[in-house]
Length: 116
Image (cartoon, rainbow, N blue to C red):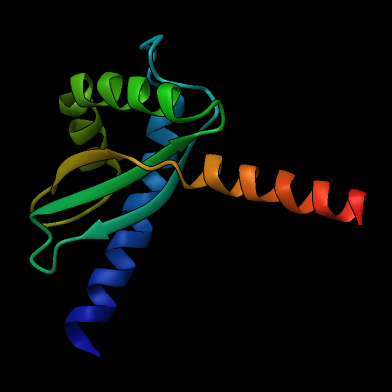
């Protein structure tokens, strides 16, 4: 239970902190409707891959990721201040269109139910 529990707990703490940090990013490219879909923390805690998705769709998600990448230094500093780890992981933002896909699937199901 040692390493994986620690990694899971750290990932949870990092995700909670990142949600707060993302709210304070002033870059106009970063969507206000951005969600963290998934977080993948390396076993050695050296880096964290943050999969994000914007409600406005794929293009806005890609644009948001560009804004987040340019704010990566700020994000890492804020993360270091909020989460107590021996070393702060490198934060890598990755666009994920799963919110857009699930909205599309939802609309198809809704249409099928209406037609059926």
